[in-house]
Amino acid sequence: MEELSVMQRIDRELNASLDVARAMRITLEWALRQSAAQAGLIGVLEEGGVRVMAQEGYEDMLLDAENPLLPLDQPAMRAAVESGQPQRVTLEGSRRGILPEARQQAIVPIRREANVIGLICLESTSPDSQPSESVNFLSRLSDHAAIAIANAQLYSAVQAANAAKSEFVSLVAHELKNPMTSIKGYTELLAAGAVGQVSEMQASFLNTIRSNVERMATLVSDLNDNSKIEAGRLRLEFKAVDLGEVLDEVTRSSKRQIEEKKQTVAVELPHKLPKVWADRTRLAQVLVNLVSNANKYTPEAGKFEIGAKRAKNQWDPEGAPEVVHVWVKDSGIGISMEDQKKIFQKFFRSDDQKAREAPGAGLGLNITKSLIEMQGGHIWFEREQRS
Image (cartoon, rainbow, N blue to C red; front, side, top):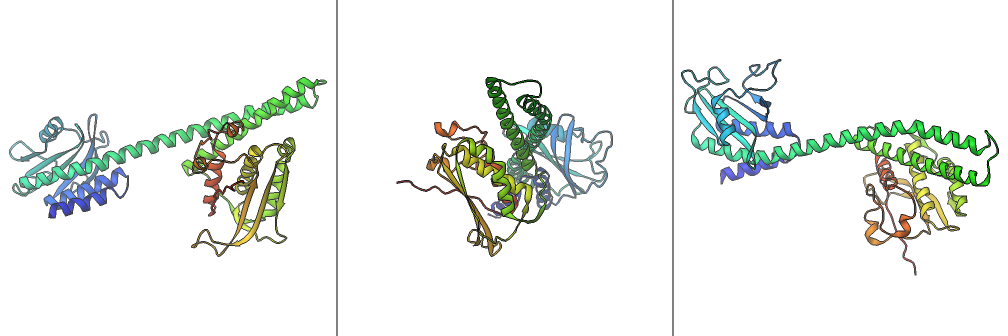
């Protein structure tokens, strides 16, 4: 019962995080505590030896500038790796441990399924300090540790892959900006007649090129922002921002797209609206995304509304007593109950055929949500049932 209680406690400590080094350190601490050994180490098995992750009692004995791995030159270590079974040996005569004065050595393999992924090595100065019961406990401890260590290693690998992916996407997005700027610039020059008269059909083709370049620029910008958010490299510059000014800029920048669909936009703002503490550029990006979304999914000649008001903070009891509540309300194509749960997910695109007619990669609302939360705000979606 005492051992079960100890193991339960060990499991809680091991699974408190997905840090390989922490899991290794906790395992070694418990191994030393339960075995009363004077020195010990724990490491992961690699080609050529053991990479020591934590050690106690060896001081600088394990440091080797030429070879950072501990070689498997201890007979008990080799036997533990080859057999997958714990080894307990008395050190005498020509048989020596890592600790010069060690008289007892216990090597416990850390196994994941049929593979040995690491080793625990414990050494004592007394030949009778590690009874077989202690080795049995260490063997059970290694089984518990193996799961936590394997999970931590998998998590670390996923994190590394995500970081590499984010770095790659950021690099590609940066490299694509220059050619797209060039294409857009030359397209506008041709459309303006800089090199001769442009026919109606040619103007139509140039408008198509410009429209698609703008879509590509939006996609590249979204991918770049997403990679920065994932990598934690997106920096915000907070200051007091006049929301009315930002909304005015957003509606002016979106005027062409709105007029192309003959839509009507109503802006509802009180005469005096308090300033908000935010990053002005990212706040504008959020509003552009929401207005663009309303524009894309509202039918031609439809209407949508942008509004803001001072309100009591009913959404975050621990936040500021009062907030500015902003909304974008449209009369669009609607969204199913099932899709409502997913609209803020990365790369989500509805299966609804009408929704799929609008261009997009499914990143806008995900980035919008991240940007709002990074500035201490909240975003949600409400659907009005039509009769």
